[in-house]
Amino acid sequence: MNADAQPARARILHVVTGGFSGATQVALDLVRAGADGGRFDVMLALRRKRHTPMDRVAQLREEGLQVALVPGWSHVATVMALRALCRRWQPDLLVAHGFPEHLLARWAGLWAGVPHLVHVEHNSRERYSRWRLWQARRLAVRSDAIVGCSDGVRESLLNLGMPAARTIAIPNGIRIAPFEAATAHPFASRVPGLVMAARFAGQKDHLTLLRGLALLRDRHGMTPPLLLAGGGSARHRDAAVRLCQELGLQGQVQFLGHCATLPQLLMTHRFAVLSTHYEGMPLSLVEGMAAGCAVLGSDVPGVREMLRDGDTGRLVPHEDPGAWAEGLAALLRDTDGAAAMAERGRVEATSRFRHDQMLAAYESLFERLIATERSPSIAASGR
Image 1: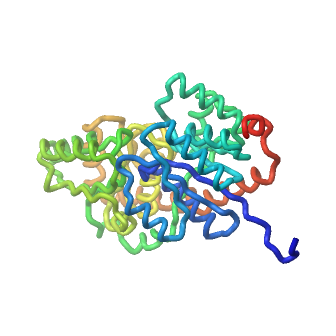
Image 2: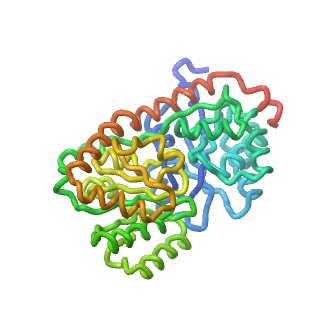
Image 3: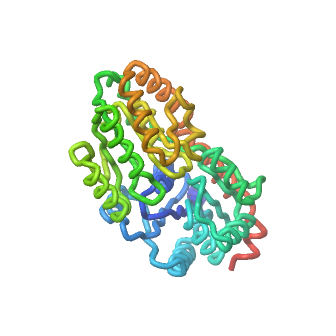
C-alpha cells in the first residue's frame, strides 16, 4: 500500500422525507457540513412525496451534493430502493430522520448489512399504531443511538419505550450569520406584521391563526399583514386559501410559497408566529427569535420547551383563535414591551440554538459510533 495514500473516508447516508420539512432542513445541514468539512463522504436520500419540489432537488445537486430520490408511493417500494442504494453505496452509518422514514430506512439498512444505524426524531408526537410502535421498539435495540431534537422529544421517545441508555437529545440549531443584521433593524421601524414560515401540512395549524386574525379585526379593529411562507401540501394550502376568502382576509394575507429571502423578511417584520398542533423543536421560531422578532407559538410539546412565556416569547393555547386575537392585540398595542421581549428572544436564540453547536454534537456522535465495533445485534441481522 502506498504510504502517501489517504485512508478512505467513512460514508454516511441520511434518509429523510422529500417534503422539505424541518427534518429535511436538519438533514441537509448535516449533509452540507459533512461535504464541506471533508471528514465524511455523505449522501442524502429523499423519500419522494407528491409535492416534492424537483427544482429544489436540482438545486441541491447543482451545489455538488449527492442526492438520491427513492419512491414514496409504497413502504415496500421505499425499503427495496433504500436496500439497493445501501448495497450499492456501502454506507458505514445510516441516519434515519423522522417518521415513518426512520422505520423504513432502518429496516432497509439492517437488510443491507449497514454497520451502524441512528434514528433522529424531529417531532414530539407521531401516529404510532401498535404495529408501528412494535417496529420502533424492535429497531431501537438494533440501533446505535436514538436522537431527539430537543429534551421534550427525548422525553416523548422514552415514554414510547425507547431504551434510555441509547436515547439522547441534540437540540436543533440555526445559522446565526444570516441574522447578524437584526440589530440594524430597530423593532419600532419594522413593518408591524406577522410572518409564519411553515409548510402546509396536517401538523401545522394555519386555520386557527387565520380565524384569530379575523377576530383581531372584528374585536379590536386591527389588521396587521400576515405573510405565509412555505410550500407543502396543495390540499392544506387550498383549505387555507378558502378560509381566507370566507373570512374576508384576502387583502391582509399573502401566500408566498417557498421563500429564499426568509431572513430578510423576518428582520423587517415585528412578529414571527407558529400556529401548530405539535412540534419537535421548530426552527422557524428560532429563526424568528434570531431575527429580532417577537415570537408567538402554540402551547404544545416542542414549542413550550423552547419559549419562556412572557419572557422570550408568548405561548398561545392550542386551537384557540380567541387567544391568538388577544395575544396579538396585546403585543401590537405595547410596542416597547414587544421590543424588549424580542431582544431577550434574540439573545436566547443566538446563544442556545446555534448551528455550530448542533453540528459539533452530531459530528462527535457519528465519529464515536463509526470508530466502535459493529453492534452485535445489527451484525446478527445483517447479510
